[in-house]
Image (cartoon, rainbow, N blue to C red; front, side, top):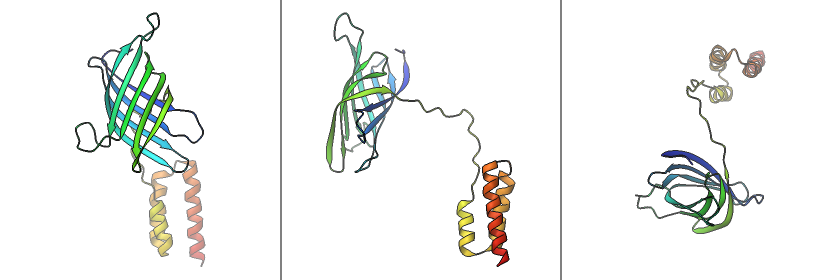
Length: 193
C-alpha cells in the first residue's frame, strides 16, 4: 500500500445484467486513515439511474485471520454537497477490501426517488483510471449549429460563410473534408434552384 496520499478508482457491482454499477473515485490519506472523493451510480435499465454523491469516511487495517494478510475495513458516508453541508446523507457504504485496495466486497445504500435502495455483497474491482493529457489540444469550433441555422433560414450567404470558416480551420482532416464536401454539394444544389 502507498504511504501518504494516493488515488484509487473502484468499480462495485454484483455483475447482474442491468444492475447498478457504483464507481468510487477516492483520495486516500494513509497518515490520518481518511478517505474522500465521489461516488457515482449508473444503471442503464429502467428505471435509469444517474446518482452522484460526495463521499468521506475512514478506514482501518485488520487481520481477519492472524496468519493472513491484512484487509481494509472501509466506511463511507455521502451527500450531494459534502460532509459539512446541511443536506441530509444520501449514501452509505461499509466493506472489506484487500490490502491493495483493488478487490473485496461491500454493502452500500443510496437515497434516490424518495426511497433508500440497498445493495448487499457487491464485488469490488479496480476501475480504469482516466488519464487526461498534460497539454490538452486547443478547442476546435464545430459549426453544426450555425450550418443548421443557415440551412433552416435558407440564407445562402451565411451558409457559404460558415462552410468557408470550417474549411479554413479543418482542411487537414479526412472525415471533416468529406463533411465539408457534402456541405458544398448542398450549397451547389441550393444555388441551382
